[in-house]
Length: 347
Image (cartoon, rainbow, N blue to C red; front, side, top):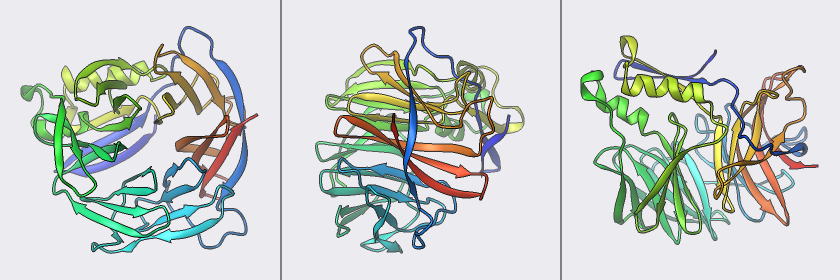
């Protein structure tokens, strides 16, 4: 089992490992094969380059927004056909500048960019509108009804609500805690435990806790509606993490956790995850948010466990165009050691 990520904070180590193949739900999902329609950058593109796997997000018109969190202080806006449209922002910490970008969402005609300790808002045409700063750690976010729903570290609540000017409108949700007697650095361990992604549906908000494989659901009044383990998440990885958070602690203060899935997205009231399965190294699974059953399993070409795999799949986004879903997938090609965004549709 290979180490996926290693971070040294306060002399403590955090290791994230990819889990074992996921167990599929009891009902057999429809199986669809994906075909690549665009590679970004292509052979003729010299202005775009990804040194590390980029964050990727697609809007309703098929335009793609991408940045490398480790080496880009700007946003690539890319056409549906894979051509560079523009670079948005430049390196710096002032108005219109970008510094350590983390995550991006498109809301109407606005781009909302989360940076290290701030938010910047641009139009989809690249014009700067506003920046506001938040001087505390923060995690995933999403946007609904012109409000930012942000997972924040510290305090008793887990989700804070802001307007686009940075005014805090409220907070809800309860942060997860660990037994203080079990961990010498309980606050740091709780920061890892509360690592989460936020997704806004039409009527409900979803918070995915990355190392528990749990999806917590709220309405927009802040009322907790329930929680479920995501189908397709690796149960062995979840048990490994829960045991160390709540029972045994972490040996030698080294925080070693496993990722139950590779990535997650919620679009158009459907849940999508990328995970290992018994048959393939990476697949995207479409899950009903009503029945919580896996309905469709999308497989990548050449990802079978019995074939040679030249591509390593990292993270993804999904967007409906017409009556078909398109998947925007970050891959590393072992043949040339380069990082690309592949756009797939199902056959």
